[in-house]
Length: 78
Image 1: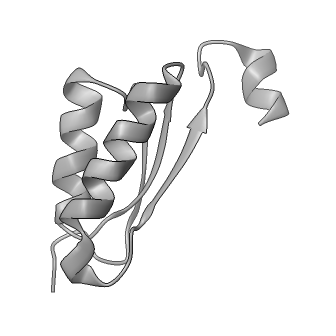
Image 2: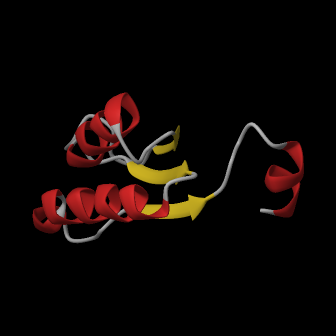
């Protein structure tokens, strides 16, 4: 059993840097991820990396949303 199996993690800023590294690490440890960022291309790349790393686990386990979590209106409309 993976350490984060049956856990859901929300990661903001997942398109690069610490957010991307966190998503990739938690994804390989079994967490289901909900990743968000304003950078659509970077977010898609992170999701692809996580899905590829999780191929042996039987499911992608990652959902994405291009949004600015610092903007209350963007959060309300999501």
